[in-house]
Length: 199
Image (cartoon, rainbow, N blue to C red; front, side):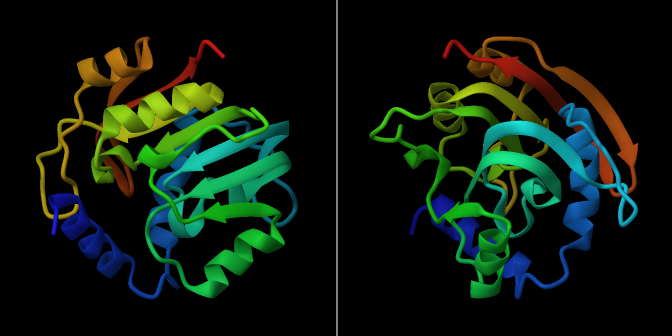
């Protein structure tokens, strides 16, 4: 069993039955703001993001992609290699979001050549087998990449890479913002930004 496979087992166990995702979703509100998503609350919740009719691929969105909090989505696709309960898949289906059980390293261009207006990468690269390849795939299929990642975190059982600012800048072909954060529960050194690609 590879190191990545072991880390996936750890991650699958961490999510458990996937029912209580509040902790992760609370952090995602910070990620969304830092990635520049436009919040447009309504009478039910302040946590709604208007995508103005664009298409989005969410790499590693897992159980509770930020796309679930978005409106005006032209096309939404979430990919994640973890096994999800059927009700999680149903939740995406009811939102007209496609869920595909694949790795970010295995993204391929669609036969018709379709691309995405945006690719979102948030709190996922530490979990991937080859983070550079995931970013390369994102650049090959999306016109813009929005990213939020924790950096300089030591490797552990579930996070098999330590992400560095210089590497991310190199892979993305630009310069992200780095910030020490202390938002409950999002705490640590973060890297984020919006990067146009050459598509």
